[in-house]
Length: 53
Image (tube, rainbow, N blue to C red; front, top):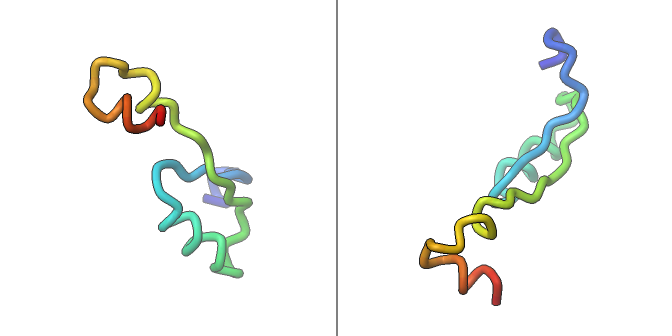
């Protein structure tokens, strides 16, 4: 990622990979969680009501 000039990595969904990458002290790219609006944008999907509550 450094060869591609990446200086920030955002992880989405669960924090599994976020925690692993962030704990790696040799990984010299800032890692932050990101909110993905997919579940809130699809009001027709069954999980929308559960997500909103």
